Image (cartoon, rainbow, N blue to C red; front, side):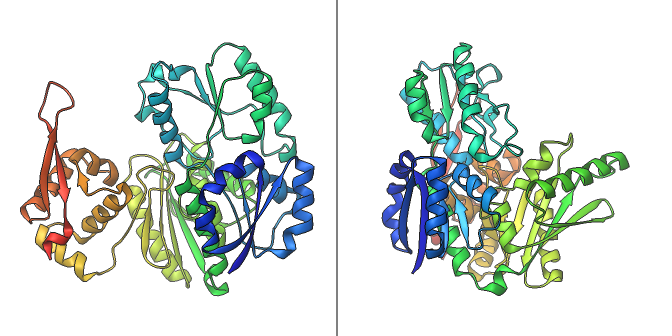
Length: 433
């Protein structure tokens, strides 16, 4: 089994212990709790050599070590907050504090785009902001003092009733200043995804980790040359931001990025988000779609990137998809709609496709949606949301599944007094055997 060192402050350790038993099934875990930045540096310096890989409780300890050490030389990962963790906390707060005015709740710097507009009316939307600190130019060890000052000024302004942060080591400071707070911590599911991703890194053969990845960056068609130049400049800035992880080439109205699987895994946090898309979106006034393809040859990687780009181009705004070396399509990254599916030939999928008279790709996507939901029921609204199609198209698909004996109306839900009730279908692909 692999030996893994976990670097974490004491408050975060309590959360990590929720997955301790599962982690120990796959690795020999050594916890190295630190009490200060100096203590973290000492622990890493003294113990790093004895581990096969490193796991950090969050981006803060990771940034401290990486900025001082550069390339860590071994597989590593850090726990991060997923979009679903934000949404779960919002639901928890709404149930626990029904009187809470979310327009007076502040969420600190997210690591990925969060769409609160889908949950709240505009006047009720929380304050999803960024502390006025240039995190890229300030050493990670110097983050805390300006963050503390910023939080205190925000609280004293009277504009917020609750401050939500992912910096668990701020606990004593908040108590001292009598600031009402809530910690945003990764869920056990998010942490386990990161942990298993680290295990995959350590298990991967050298050939696999050095395999080629191609990214196709697709702006809207017929974009003026001045804006194509702005995209190129933003791509170069992205390259510098993340330590020059890829080569950039222009091909017509598209840009091609070349890197390897190890780098892509880090840029996408194990195929869950896309830091490149987020960076581009932050400085451009038009959507950008990115398709990543992974393979052992450049030709195959390019072909898969085109397949991923095709999926990304079906999305309304900026989006990113990955087609892995195992021909699994994952996307859209950085979205609660992210699913994993395959368009490879499969006898079961083909048989279900014939029976329901829908494409094998839709069958694979629906199977993935059900797995993502952890449920065997679907409404047309849910299916439309996950597949990025209209509700009418989703209704037609469900009707075909019903006609093929794969779906049946379980019950109907009336959300308001007007309109037709929503049909909730129970999906049973095994019934089509």
